[in-house]
Length: 226
Image (tube, rainbow, N blue to C red; front, top):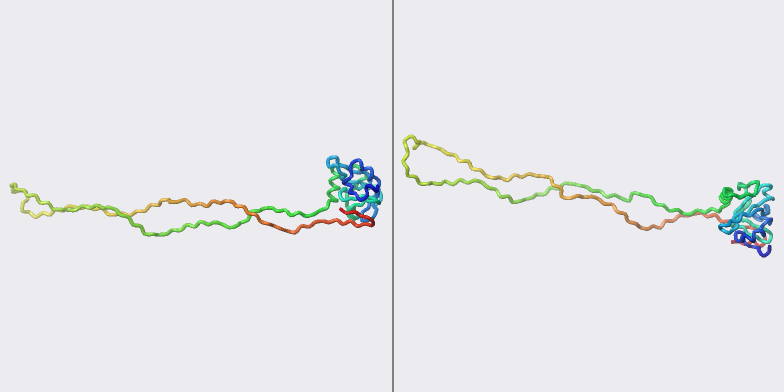
């Protein structure tokens, strides 16, 4: 296996898979078992999972993701510590279906936080319309008419009878009329006032701190890291 020493096993081709079978498996420099079945994904054309049996696991079968595992001269070294296997899912048979595959990946996946930026509506101010009343004087010109009296005398030379009331005192009153200005008010709408809202966009830079898990491989001898 010297030609495969120091190689990540997820880089193995389908024809090279037999080179991995029954090799010892080491975690934290301690042998925990040996390679049993190997799950090769035809779609990704990669070794996705490795089944470990014997040793630390007894009669159980332990599947682990292949990513990060390196084949050295002395065997297969995985990036997981002994503590990672305590609560790991394992079964009595070698079958790895989609459900088990999801459980394995969910347990051994390396976590890190990613910052997520969303948007929310907040109150950024307001617009207020206030109406008040002002009084101002106004003037206009109006033409008014009024009646006038003028005495018109017309000579008359006619005899009159005795019973016509001549030489009696009389008083005649003639009423005169005139126009006067009358002021009234009416309410007239002059303007509609409304507030229209628009949307403007701007870019802000936001930041935060995120955590990432790091995996360190420790072991004796020539240990390759990727």
